[in-house]
Image 1 (tube, rainbow, N blue to C red):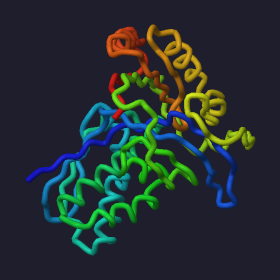
Image 2 (image 1 turned 45 degrees about the vertical axis):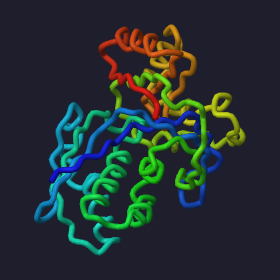
Image 3 (image 1 turned 45 degrees about the horizontal axis):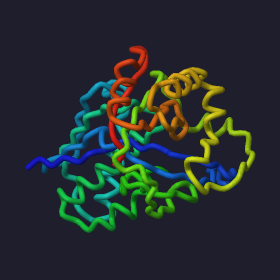
Image 4 (image 1 turned 90 degrees about the horizontal axis):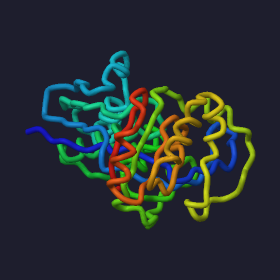
Length: 267
């Protein structure tokens, strides 16, 4: 019996960084949204725990013997008091270190998958998610929501974007979260109210580290029918919400081949 679980890409419609905390983390306010498409995690009963990785970005995880999928499985088994028995399979379609929660989405999908495979209380998944990463609770929910604290305090919101055609574009540059937050100037530019009038406070430091982000944003803004353009998370992936599917598809077809892109819809 093999089960599968989607791991949709995470987007930050807005991301306001409010302060750097004494523990080195950051208080923020954000609106999470999720695409229909992304990675996929599958699993089946087995003696012991194993993980096989396939897909266009599998090579970037080849040397990671303790990635978030395996850590999520072990944490869930320990919390539920069950054996860590599962053969897991990850189809890695999303780029790594790209600001769209790929690893967090994979961990969250693993928690949902194993909750079903092991027939355990979903509360265990919610309990272990925050320790796996700041975005994992939001990815576990995978619904449009407002995140506060380090992103783990969630409340569902209606942002009016369900079904919106979206195009994600990454300049094929991996960008780790830590250096971007370290480069943030520490200025609190105010709370998040309306996400459309908001901002991503990490865009400036990310662009300083990866100037190609500016090229991607400018290119997306120049596409017909692109009504909203922003960088997601700590970058380097940027996205545009389009007025209709045809305009999004035209932009996807015109995307420079040196860049990764994904045409999808928001959930």
